[in-house]
Image (tube, rainbow, N blue to C red; front, side, top):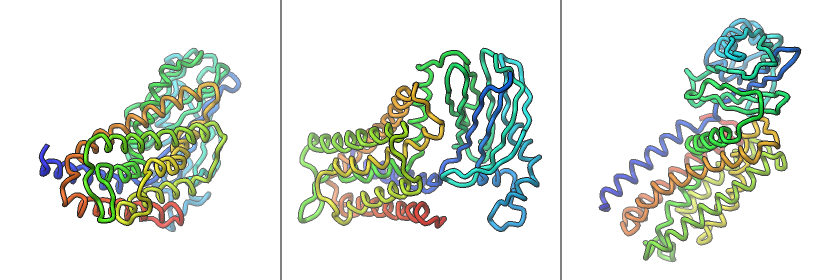
Length: 377
């Protein structure tokens, strides 16, 4: 690979990464579905974010930026038609009717949710329950529907996505292999759209093929120390976020979501700024470990939303971690050859490295303002 082709590859990859990050920095769209047997049928609870309902139904009638209880109740029929029209249940292949029993409003860590309490006439004695879920995918392809299904055989979880809208759940013993694959996929997807995590790791990797001295950055003399540096960073980050991911998902660590997300944004900013103005000169692996502890709590938020039970916690954590690590290794495999190829180029450590780092730091600064004080950009 020539220096020119490496430069083009690095520039294109960085541009795509930053543009994608800017586009996907918002909080992911989630909805929560809970089903449990009751009186020979099934009772359900569907939590829908008001910000998502606003996108599809324009509930804010007076345009004041707030959705009141009166505005919500006035459109109850339309909300019913939208939600239950896109949520279809079948017991052993036989479709079931559903109707809303009550409305509530609940507050999650990311805002207000409309809560639909409904009842479905699916027989609770069925061997399998099929669920077709089609909410919000037309306005947000990244939307996720998080299912918690309670039955005498135990609690199950599933995730609905734009390319996985139908789930058929056997109401006997759960299949661990299927859960492992599903959560591996979700871990990979979460890191793929989790640009704050990726940009933190990328900020630590950008100078991995360089050495910092009194005169500034100089190229690493050989591949072996570069590999050792990258291995230390990735291993430390993995160990740290795996630790707090497990503790948080098990309910042993609980921190305010706003504080966690703000700290993650701050970690990205600090890692990027260090490439321009030295905040630490060595032991990037230690920085990766310390901030990785915070990132692990952030990873756990997507799992906690499913209402994890302890019986299958290990399987789900293992799958999710496998997916996250696959995503991280993909980033390393893409970046490392390019960074090593351009390490001796003056333009890289004089211009490209500070420019890329400054762009990442600026983006992370916007995230920090959004997440800490609620300023929207």
